[in-house]
Amino acid sequence: MSNNTSVNYKWTFSIFFLMFLILFVQLFGTDMKEPIKAVLESGLLNKLLWAFVAGVLFIHRYLFASYELAKDSFIYKHFGAYADTLFGIGTYGVAGSTSLALLKGLYMQTFFQGKHFIGFGTFDLISMFLLTSFLLFYCIFNTAMLLKDIIFYSENSVVEVRS
Image (tube, rainbow, N blue to C red; front, side, top):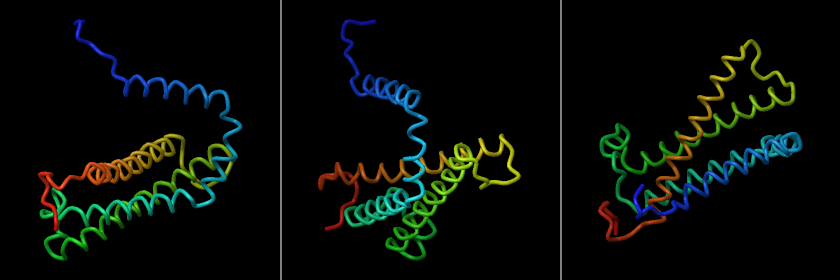
């Protein structure tokens, strides 16, 4: 170890936050079941997801003349940039809301004895959880990367900017 080392506050905070979250769930997990159920049944997460995806993609489209890979896409070539944006919103919105619906069903079946997925075994349910969690993460992560472009937007950016 060299003498030039410094504390990485971002990762240190992440470790402590994760430890706190695990401890919190262990202590209050049973008490959290009903509020989580209420949030899942309210439809608020779907509305937030659609607003996040649509808002970020529209603003990103307005600020940047093109995405990095947009000119290679079939939709961009044949229908134009705005159609590409609308299809992007639809794709991420549908993927995210479908993932939320499946995760809601898995949560209700696991913690409230509901029967949303009849005939599915434990392996199938675990696989469904992993795949839908990944799909939701993928949707949110890609949209968040576009949000990062918006937040750190600069007219001196290398990306071609519309006037």
